[in-house]
Image (cartoon, rainbow, N blue to C red; front, side, top):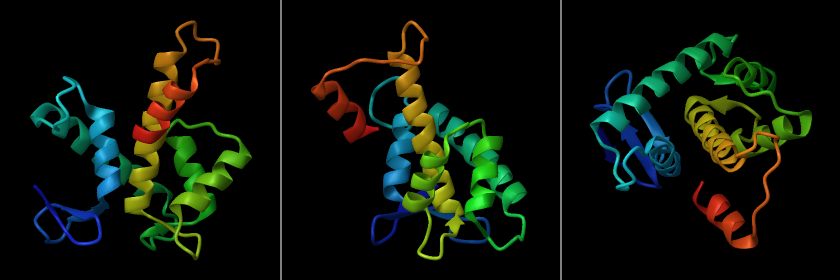
Length: 151
């Protein structure tokens, strides 16, 4: 169960122990990621897929939160992303830390999930466009805007 909170945040759970508060944008991105029928809604099947992904993300987060502080350092985040299957260059890791960390450079679970959802979405879009699987895609300005504005 989820419900809206103030400041664009959403409570996922019943507000008791084990509940998670996500940024609304993150859930919208996850809705894009999990769409199966294109109706713009997160149905039961899509919800189940998303919920299982969040549980998997939690397992990765706990494994790489080495000091069990409830947040990850930049080093822990890099290891977690690699464990989740993302092999990125140094510049991308730096950009991700800049975008998803708090001012003290710590990454909480909410931001970790949002980052993974975003990465999965962008990788999925790229792979769909890379029809010959050569790692190169070409598109015009309008396709670029469509991908970046809604991904």
